[in-house]
Image 1 (tube, rainbow, N blue to C red):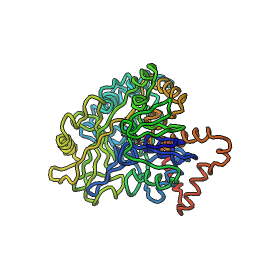
Image 2: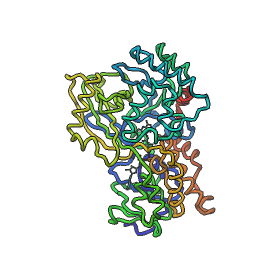
Image 3: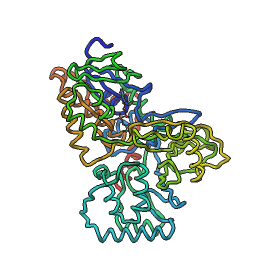
Image 4: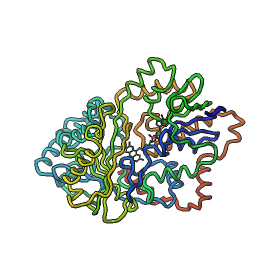
Length: 485
Ligand SMILES: Cc1cc2nc3c(=O)[nH]c(=O)nc-3n(C[C@H](O)[C@H](O)[C@H](O)COP(=O)(O)OP(=O)(O)OC[C@H]3O[C@@H](n4cnc5c(N)ncnc54)[C@H](O)[C@@H]3O)c2cc1C
């Protein structure tokens, strides 16, 4: 029980919550429900392998986010040209499928090219797709039916593609022209296209190294408390309950970073209209099966699997993200990502933990990432109950309605699941800064006058103090150039 009132209580110790703590000028208390900090930017170290919670890489266009990565990682980062592929019709094609179909069987190429030309003639340049499924048709029936539809059905499971909007696609999914589609079908791919074609990754410690770097830069403005699952919020009393009320934390300001619908579910005195709004938000969950094997079986970074012969939709080759993610060069570390609809049974519930592992191992053999003679050196399953928010048509106004009600009660909500946005880690770090700025700006004028340095000054000072002299400017320029291509 925390007797005195906390200036700011932060719920959740992922990138957003930790970044909020880093950027807050006043005192804070951070409550993290899990035993470890880091949220989905955590990593698991086991049997000499490092596995992230699903494939994670670093790419950003934001100058301040670059500074944060520089500060948190220093020299513990390396950069690589993306080697991402799609495996369909027993063939590897370079990502993105729509721009690189060279090498697929003739009949598939014919469908893809014919469809792309028909789509070019059908859709005007300024055509605005009505929904995600409609957007797929703008590449033509061939590309839609041979990759975009089956892959996305596998990823989004039961969510009809017609119910997903298109406002999250900009800047994420490469949109080649018809000329590029045809060129990519008849010529050997020349270069990678789209965002993250050049990316960074921590050398040691997996993606979690970013979180460790952040935690190491926090001052003593507040405690980071783990194993503190928030189970109730008394919004009028301004009190947070942990573990069913076993502990209570009074607050002046509350920053939430846990999933918005679940957070509304634990607040008291919520009007029916807000409960109804929260109930409309949908999401997808992921289970990752981590497999370490002897022998190095691929140089690729990740591979998409649109077909039904594998239970996973994507394999992240964790052992190629950094050489330090595996115990020996002659081993492979894979993260197999399998999505499921929350509440409809995890793959692990359906097959049993060992059954799920066996299925993934078998499927790795089917697609040639493992030979039957390769010994399995590590196998484990992790669950990500909230992984992808579903961008439904009314998501924006629905989230806005909930936010207004929360803010009326002194509660800010931020982050991938607090803002209910498709954020990567850079966006989440920036969301944490944004929410901290809002809280800082609400402080009294005297307190504001006494504020510490600006965020950018603080980062610079910490870099100087830590002796971090390189800013990786050349590498970041390549990341940015890849973004624009
Ligand atoms: C499959 C997948 C792939 C991704 N790939 C990339 C990538 O390649 N590059 C990239 O930059 N980003 C990637 N991301 C995004 C990145 O993981 C997120 O942006 C980031 O983790 C979100 O940070 P957050 O702090 O907002 O939320 P989270 O990381 O979810 O953190 C929220 C925290 O709140 C805690 N919490 C929840 N409920 C409670 C409670 N009741 N009480 C107390 N604590 C609670 C959780 O335990 C968690 O620690 C990916 C995400 C997913 C799901």
